[in-house]
Length: 368
Image 1 (cartoon, rainbow, N blue to C red):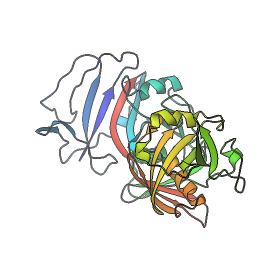
Image 2: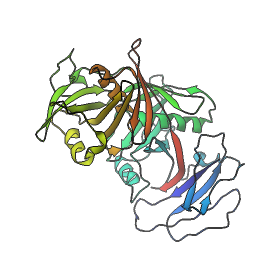
Image 3: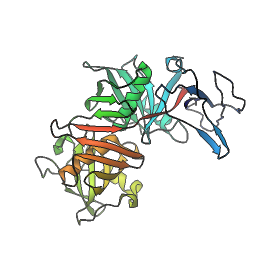
Image 4: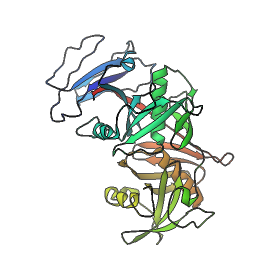
């Protein structure tokens, strides 16, 4: 059984906080509170899209939802003036604040507010804010994202899986479902599987160097494959791929030294790739270790978000780059710090398909 949390947290007063455990359906005896911040743990029916969730203070104490309950269906219908209601989701630890924005084609908050909400000490904490908006150009929905630094990426692979689960929650959809989503990277089609995982048709990879975009010279059919890139005196072999957003995929150095990704000082080297002059729109950077033709391990430095536990578009770009460099087959498990994704680059339609989880973490309200 799962539980959800309602959180009220002022953006302008990060120094005071309190915690109250309550249940609107049946009072819980233990609670404590002080001044400005409230957490309400609500019971969640197992048939709704929400994961198991337990809070433990010690091996001998835990708070768990009861076995049977009525879903708090009214939460996402709230429309109080001055409050932002949201659901926190994560895809393999890549976490997002999901906002029901279906009544407007403009985001309900500004990029500056998104930065505050995403702050992990003074806000909710997230890699980005995702807005579910009305569809355009014949699509069912539109997805927009503000990164934790306030920038707006074209797309996010883990984010679109969370988006799909969020839409199913909003529309009370059950079982296998698919819909069309307009993004800055074009049409994306996520499909919720019977087991709750989400399979996403990510479309065709963009390989033409100038369209990625990168200033690295094309060296293979207009693409930059195992191209040389100098970063702080080290020459790396990089392959550039766009999945609607730019990626620089690295398996090793020019000298032939393969990566041991766990040994990388990602926080030091990642920004140097992101802001390198060869990437006019900045870039996401994937550092990859090959275990077998069907098993890759990846760490990522995301443009606008930094080191994250997972990157769906990055996993897709990694498999495309591995195929182009002759390192792997077209169907791979990509191991990320937050867990594995299954990626397939189909030869028959040239589309990349990503399959992985997306889970709700808690429900919250923030005064704006």
